[in-house]
Length: 92
Image 1 (cartoon, helix red, strand yellow):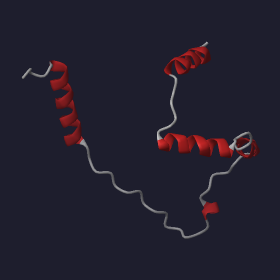
Image 2: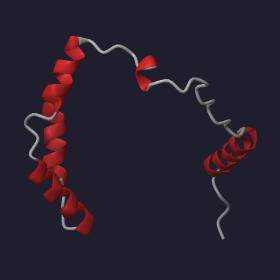
Image 3: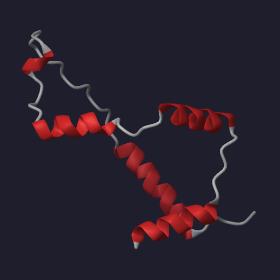
């Protein structure tokens, strides 16, 4: 059996060190007030409201649902060459 490389040993030591150094996260305190959520909500600008209203426009829900189903069924295939070409085109 071949001995692990120095890089693998170093990675394993780092992972062990980080695992030992990790502390459990305390849950966030819940607000003491039992008032309405509008008391703690941040104000929303008119521009943000307009953007939110436009966000759903142009989304074909049926097409999204069909793609989700194809992905879940394992039928959706990606053409890696086309994907790479489009990424490079978007970068300029």
